[in-house]
Image 1 (cartoon, rainbow, N blue to C red):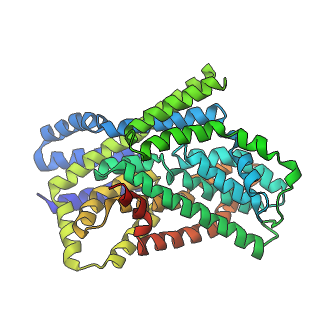
Image 2 (image 1 turned 135 degrees about the horizontal axis):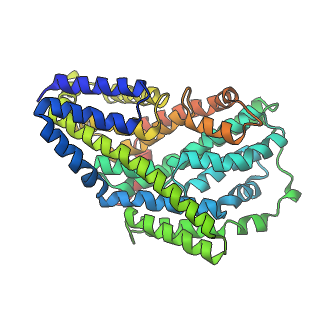
Image 3 (image 1 turned 45 degrees about the vertical axis):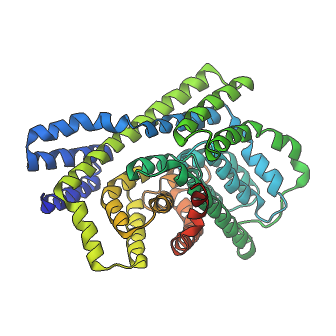
Length: 434
């Protein structure tokens, strides 16, 4: 073992990332070079040749392309198009109805998507023009959608949660169930931000309810039956134990295709586009995962993970101090890295420490996804912000969107504090499954 080599590898990894080397290449290059240094070129080549298959052949990961396909089919066939209108129909009498409707529509879209970027892009195209037309300040309207998009990775099926479950070797289904709680908490917290803004700053968020006469409630609710049916089939079977999280992905993808065919909305073009986007997204995620698996093995060989776990135990860190360090770590990384890279770079180091401290890995999975999603709306590399800028470039600048997300980031930090102070909020539903 060589702890110094492990530390050098971690430093080199962050240097490569700072130089804008792609995350996957950095995660692969460091362990290959490190193992070659420690054991010679033959073991390094052996790990390079064996790890991709051993990682990708993990059965649980088959849920990733399946859930992605379900989301892309639902989006490209227009199943999710009526979510915003349905939310408006239900919430039209509430002050700030348009902004709150967009946030809850993001939550509905998240249930068939699993990606915060896709959620932000889809809802941004629909909601931002209507909000600005109704008198919302462009910065606040775009900020609300950028923040609402983060719910896409919190409410299952979350691709981040699936990959976390594989690496942490914990139940993906239980992490999913825990994600429901924090997803709902986040949506309600964002709604509170809108209500407070309507009260304190009516100049940027009009408090007036929507015109009830302009909304056909019955038609709006009927238009979302395909999404509701898909959610009932997938999550009803998943949480009742009829099938696993892995099988739920396949059921969801098949269900989306069958519903799209039944409603005559599936065309060859939409099916082809969905397949291509699924393959591209899955391959990019898997290559990062392969690199992370190699990096984990490298750190294990150097003994660094055991050393750090022992150091934390010896330092006698309290629960609050440890959580504060982890929160700061992810908030800083979230400013510069995309979520998958940030999660997979840090898990090899953090998981042994968390296990040694007896912290629930199910609870931590939910927390880390929440922290990573805060990074999606913080400068300078808030990916959701840039997505919103691209889909609403005629209305806002990047600076305006970042300005608009500030109150939502503040409430996000409060949600994180509550979850850390009261872990049972997240663990209540997963513990009921025992």
